[in-house]
Image (cartoon, rainbow, N blue to C red; front, side, top):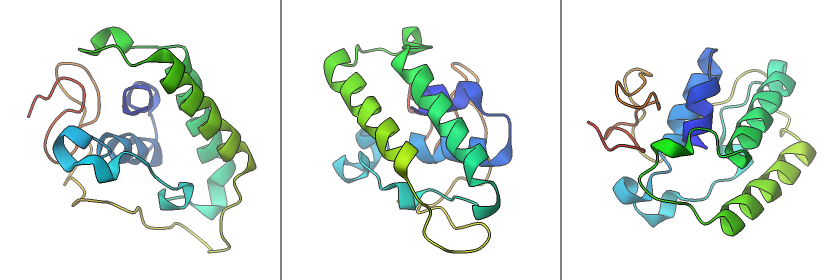
Length: 136
C-alpha cells in the first residue's frame, strides 16, 4: 500500500498517508506495526470523502499490482488481495468518529522531519529509510 500511495500522492495528506503506511514496515519496526485501525489515520472531517476516495484508489492500485516490479519479493496474491478487499469493504463503511477538524496521525515511531520520496524507487521514506529498497 505504501508503494501505491507513494505513486498516487499529490496533496499533503496523501503524502502523509504514504509515509504512515511505510512506517508499517515490520522489518524495521517489528511485527506490531503490520496492522492498523482506520481510526489511526489522520483524517480531516472537512475532507474525509476526498481522503477516503484517495485511499480507495490506493487499494485499487495495489489490487492491480501496480509498481510491484520494484519489490524484491512476491507477495502471496491470495492473502494480499483478500486483505486488500477486506480493507476496501471496511473503508467504504467507515464512519469518522465525531471530532471536528483534522486529527493527529497515530505514529508508531517518530514521524519523519519531511515527506521525501526515495531517489531509487519513489516510495516515501519512513524514519529509517525506504520500505521497498531499504535505501537510507
